[in-house]
Image (cartoon, rainbow, N blue to C red; front, side, top):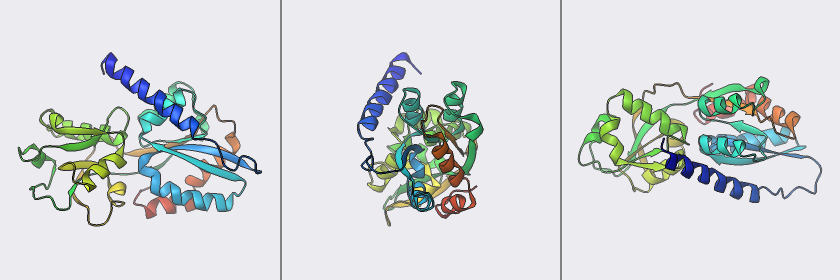
Length: 261
């Protein structure tokens, strides 16, 4: 990555951190109880939203605030000192980076879910796309993938396309998205010819907007780790949340949204 790209990513992370911190005021601050902030990969949005309801029902003294974004962006926020209690990543690499800097509580780290990448197109597409190799066609003009520097789904996609010998020819057609949800929106709106998302996100698309064309074999298994952030001022409550996510009840909720254990 060039120095200019590194600078752009650093500035983006700082701006995201400023926006995040400015919006972190807890409306229940005057009430008894503890608020924890969970930074989670964008692909976990729907599953973790339902999980929050179940968790807070069983733990009424703990209020969960979520911060959803690309795992790389979230990791950089933690590195920048954002007040995060729990980090749930869509890749091992971003958690490993924090681990190498002693920014997570090692004994709290657990792998809790896995996923797969699929190729999707707008439902009304007239292009003959049944697999990644069809994207080489001159008729295919724009393909959206997550930014591989900050969105794990993008890194998984690039690795897969490189392994298939397609990336060099497809790179010029790609439109980078901040996270998997933005890729999905581009395809739902018909703003691109195709996109690569997690299978769980494809399942959340607005009805009648997309079609799943193929499952893409990934070079690296898609594994989601979760851990308590070392700087958390509420480590006991954060650990309670991690334990719930990895419990039988938490796993049942994740499986209902298409994740596998």
